Image 1 (tube, one colour):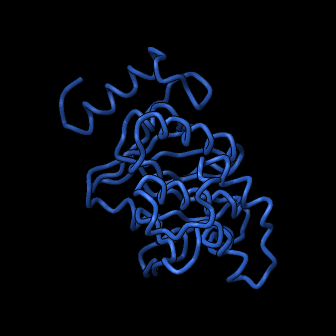
Image 2 (cartoon, rainbow, N blue to C red):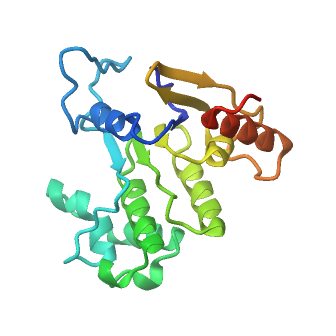
Image 3 (cartoon, helix red, strand yellow):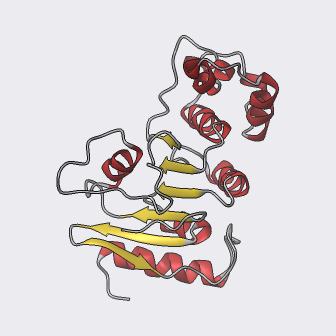
Length: 216
């Protein structure tokens, strides 16, 4: 499987096929083993320059929202930029919840906080594991557009079960199965694409049929 540098690749496939495991392997969070290799074309290993958002929000319950999204600087022993963190919380609509603990937030709000933490890391390589799954339709569209804006030009691997999300956001679409990774054509429009564009609908429909095993 090849991930194109500076572009957003969406990875789809049935549950249990190994999408999340693959993210962890490339990010260096799990051992690759003797049969696998992760190679970056610039010669610099991926671990250490990856921002990773897991399926669960992984917010620390004893920290406030703004403390949680600045945790990377705290762990590295560097001084957090609180102003930048506050601006990021405003972008994800959580500026009025900065001083709350995670237990006071809804599931969708927690997911937005986790997204803000990942975007704040400002890394060249970003792995997102179903980053919008807990959001309502309107908020999901807004967060997709924010991620597309702030991650433009980064190397992004986004795991999703949503064909519509892939059709809207991806520069490349890969479908993972037991046989390997299959490339899928994307609409000939710049991302993020309008939800109502006929090309997006057609791609979404064909993807869904393929994932269900239904002949086109």
